[in-house]
Length: 123
Image (cartoon, rainbow, N blue to C red; front, side):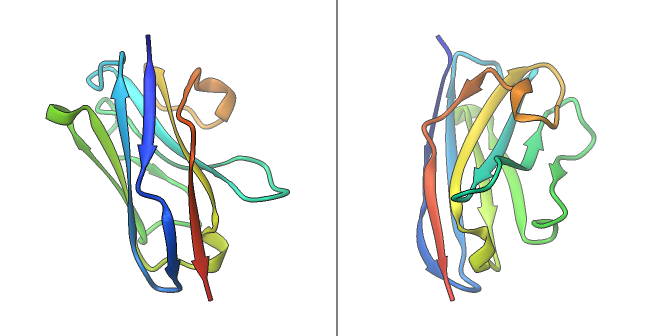
């Protein structure tokens, strides 16, 4: 059974930082893609980043490039999303999602999802 469990959300002021964690069970990180999505109230789910060991570099949405970074700890089967210089428009529920194979953009390409963690950035 595949399980993804996020943690690390919270509330910060503009310019603050948070690190989200996604513990992955049942998927080999060696040949899977773990992506981060976010969804703000009234908006579509948006891809934030995607990390696959097979890709040369992670994918980042233009809105987070230079501020967010993905890291992986294979020993802990955990993927991290380090979020710096946070802005109020980053406020959303953040989800990690997994799929076997290379990175993909649309959320529908990911069959496995975590429960989500709330990130709130106040101005």
